[in-house]
Length: 86
Image (cartoon, rainbow, N blue to C red):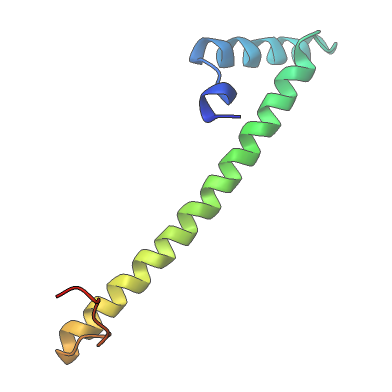
């Protein structure tokens, strides 16, 4: 399933949140509370995945920056391998 298939419009999200909030306030589950709760759980998982990806990419960037700083200080390239292009 593509990302577009999984996305709700702003109005749909607001409506689902309002329906869920109303059901909680009334103390009775609304008919659409279960789908809204599933959607919320799905979005929370997606946020968790994105947080992991961001953390990974930050560490990658930090490592690249450290290697560049080391190269600038020593004046030597960190890798002596060259591509086969001439």
